[in-house]
Length: 238
Image (cartoon, rainbow, N blue to C red; front, side):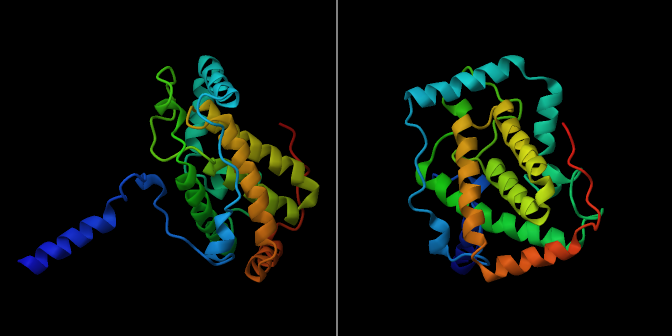
């Protein structure tokens, strides 16, 4: 019985979030492109201090969006809730449809590794979601778990856009604009401060620079290059 009880306790520990850390970002760390140390970004800046001018400006922007957002905007934000490549870029993807399995696997690998970096910085600063800080905020995406800074959606959408812009330079502005749009929906949806979004973009820039030094990442980019649709459409105007 003692052995059975111990096994049950171990199983419970494996599936419950660590105390003080949301299950939303209890993420296994990948070191396919970067080592754990390279992913730490120990010098990544902190979010605005609670009650500071910048912090109050964050909350003011959220209240402004809350007052004028539309059901269509909230639906679009919900449609991108999993932060996948296809959610962000499926309709303007430079790859054949359906996306080749090899390409999908690379974007998933990038997401898994970036998620670990994002999670580490979130846990370092532990900035709560805005609706936990101001009772006047009512997120249309729901009172989701996890922490706010930096935004994972902003990081991933911007990182994917940088990859796509490297693969198809003529459409780089289009991809970056779509990433900015996806990131803004997290503010419109009420689950991120604007400064969380800006931090996510800066983290994506740093990750992309670091990844480009990785032979494994460069190899994956060459694989993606070979999977592109031969003739790329002109950049869409939105």
